[in-house]
Length: 273
Image (cartoon, rainbow, N blue to C red; front, side):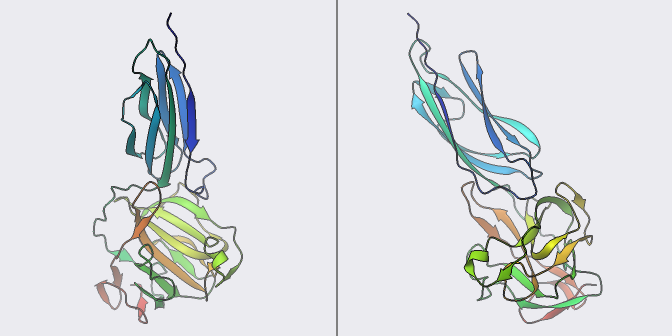
């Protein structure tokens, strides 16, 4: 007698929700004749890097037992098909995944950036690459803090699409509990890198998720939210390193009235031409 037992157990281990996006990536399993197909629906405006693990007994996976995929934005993608290895015997399978926003295969293309404020404005770099206050970790090494009053217009340093947006926080200070409570805008670039403009004031966004922004376009207003000792704009460019977490900030150069392309130095004041 033919006997088939199909058990689908899906364990979702994802990063925190990407703010500004009402829907988050989700995994969908659909039964087909003799097995199942697994899809990921990625509603974000950025690619997602995900790692998948498949286990069970008497099963065959089209993608192996462990694999990594980069899933395109705004798309439903088939990631694997599972079937019994022996169709005449009982079988079961389980499935887990984890993901983060960004493309782990992204490589910076050498683009020179504009300063992230208005033409003719000038601000000092209070904390530069490797700064001792908060830029001294592997993930945060290549970040810049521009000293600027709250409410200063923030402009896109490079063209791209807005992929994440947080505007609801109001508090700022040096309490470590505030580290994850800064308002920010994230912009995805053509080379797969992402720029973040951080510590914006409450409600300090002039853009929406999914919006294409031009280089130099007004995108928001600076503030002092999150882990911050004084009003400033924190700016960094990063790429995802691993689907299970981790990122790499990247050293970039800027056009300035003082010359360029330049790597900005802590304690120096720079003017956007």
